[in-house]
Length: 303
Image (cartoon, rainbow, N blue to C red; front, side, top):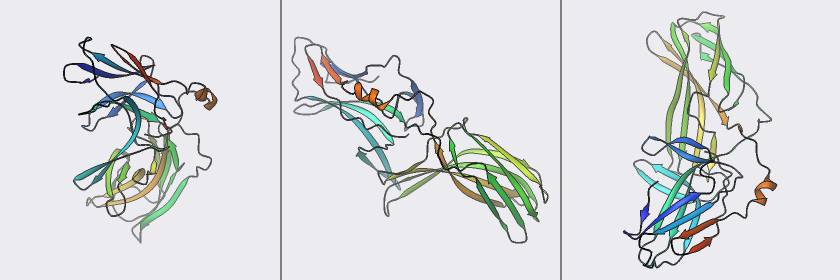
């Protein structure tokens, strides 16, 4: 953990009350590296303490107060420029804790990134996807996926049925496309990322042939679908069916699917959460102890 010091006189640290027992999960940093962060679920209480350690106990540290914030953040991209929007919402993209010691000349800040997961229940409506596509007098196929909504460790089951084949197809695959959208109005930026390429056929099909699909999602780094978070951020997923002929021409059809996070823990009741909501972050130093109430932790977010 990195310390932000007051010159050479003091150090500031954020310590969670359940740091030893709380689960950690891997998450990519802005540099693309994988780091482990503390994991919280929606409805949980965030509690701990701020530790301020003076290196020279006989000296005083002048400040105007210590505060702790729970922050959700969206990084907006527009071309080569970027802007940062900080907000509080029921659904957040990025989370971190921030402790600030207010001083006359310059504030001293310590931040801790965390991961927040929203757990969902099985959707009441989850119809299958059926569609016929093709090129007139050349290719006509019918594809079917068993559901339109999948949890992150689900299995996509389906089939491709060839009704008409008059072009020489040599290869067929399904791609999982992740599309992130940031910004508003004319300053909207889209970024597509191919999460997976899954081969389902190698060789030329014939009329009447049926190709099965069975794609396991657990092996890929996926997040739930997010729609218009703070009206500035969205994440959507598409199944892209791709056919390639012998002349390397590509024929494809995209279909959006919804991904959701299935609970893997026993959810604590909201009454239990209310009972422990009185927990607070406590600030301590080598000289004195100060108690600072924690900020409202609206962490019903998804990540």
